[in-house]
Length: 408
Image (cartoon, rainbow, N blue to C red; front, side, top):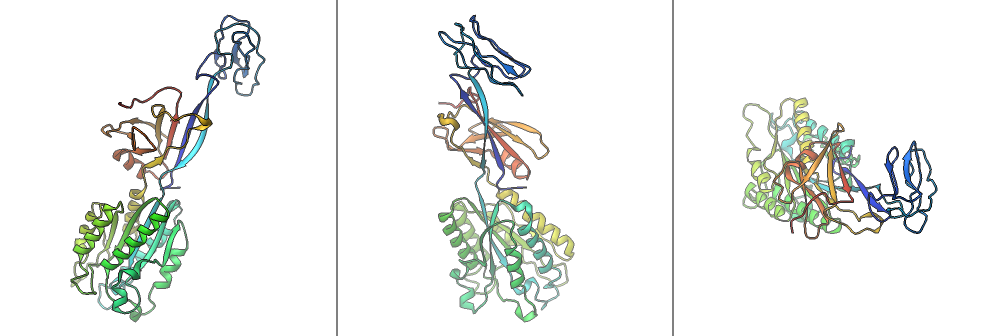
């Protein structure tokens, strides 16, 4: 199941002969008559006989299922003499590729055990299990992801430097991939003293944004940041590492079309455990993703399930709802008014989508630019439907007649 690279089946109807639906050819089981000449163009039981145009022998009609082209006879009928028809061709296109840059908290509060609420079995283990599943899940096929852990190893100057985080441990990689589980296993502490101190969230955000910007320059697509953390920024001097500054970075990234998703891993409900994720909504809202996904801990199975649900929601929301219009086949000029779009749900039920450049109608789509279109863009409600249906498919018909009207 390909989520972000939903295959778009482009049903392309090309004109064969002079005009679509002209006399002189029939479909299997149908009948199409020429003028009063001696030739006819009928198909019945799979055999067609060609009609004739003025002064010449016509070509055969299109064969019916299982039939052959029949010979044309002379005459002076009213058809084109060429057996015109519309033939369906298929092509494939993908939605805009999606790239997710993960910044993943490996600080001691995720499982060091120095406090009862820093219990590895309640936080790190269930979160890591769900994370590994996402990266190896066939449902993630078509997505690309990178993974950067924070804080880094090294001294404070290293941990609190954005340049430290511009190169992830796993660079942008097509999913599913075993590279992520291997990287997580490699960074998982074996003893309490192996856990890393501090939560330099501001600096990992800055470094990740720089990485994403460089990647997008080299490989265009839809990019987003996924921040996974169990607490507020700590260390590096609170003046330079606080939640409001992280939100500012998320807002700056959003202005450059890079949204930020946030998954906050709460402390378990143990007496004395501080609240550490409530304000993470501030980063998510600034990053254009409405709210943070806050995960309760205390029950490992429930934590893993909730984390999986959050990351699945992010996977769906990240799916692009834009598709490039491919070149029209057979060398024909593209006609923006001869396009029909349909959505087929995972259970096989097709729905015709309405063209609405203002996106006021339900189940609608629009062009990126009606004057000079290069992309089909699904309107927000339609996009949400597609994102929620991993097996959804779009059909784009290039027709012989105008099927939409573009206001001039």
